[in-house]
Length: 109
Image 1: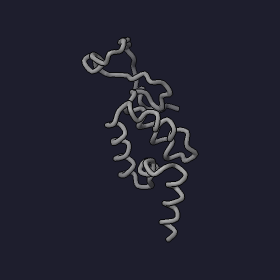
Image 2: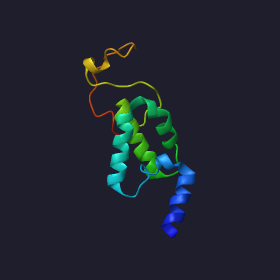
Image 3: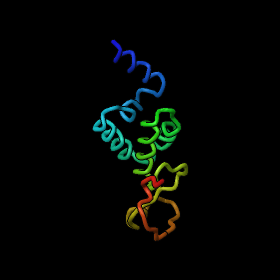
Image 4: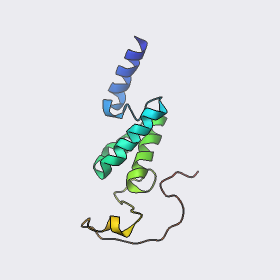
């Protein structure tokens, strides 16, 4: 009964869609991150809301998913980094090519 109460409480606080991201089970969390990354830029507004959560697991995993989509960890802008020119072409947006070093999709601190 306690587990059900906790689930209902979590669902009401963070929204039912965010529950897999906030899961205690790392496997479920990995699958949820992969799900959001596969969805792409359309889920960025939702992930940005989760990234402001009081729950540290949800916040961190939302930022990781944002990094998987945008190419830079926890981004607050709609700039999408592509690793190859072929991936960037044909999006109907201007292209700016930069040569950067490091893993910009990971948090360093």
